[in-house]
Length: 128
Image (cartoon, rainbow, N blue to C red):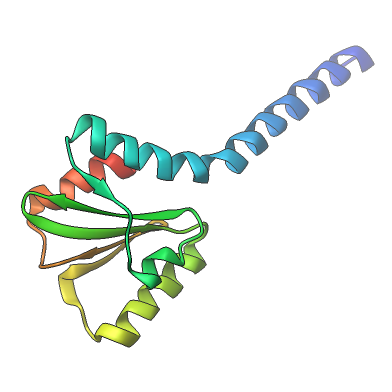
């Protein structure tokens, strides 16, 4: 290959990496705002601020909502490690919370009672 082709390839690779870097840097913040928007606009849920100090420790945000008569607190962590710490904190206070506590990626759900499959799916639809 000529130097010109190598230069073009290098520019394209650099542009792709820059785009990926921007997407990665902004993805997490959009995750919380998109979750909130989806719950309100698409699912018709009422979303409130949470008063749960464990959930509030999530760097990207937390909220409280009601899905089909089952209350749920949602914490959106900035990393998998932070999400695991939130789960550990819930377990240290509440013991074995069984199906009420769920870690899905960087999102932690704490339900008032064990969720039904449709309740879970409503949140899943809005988290990815």
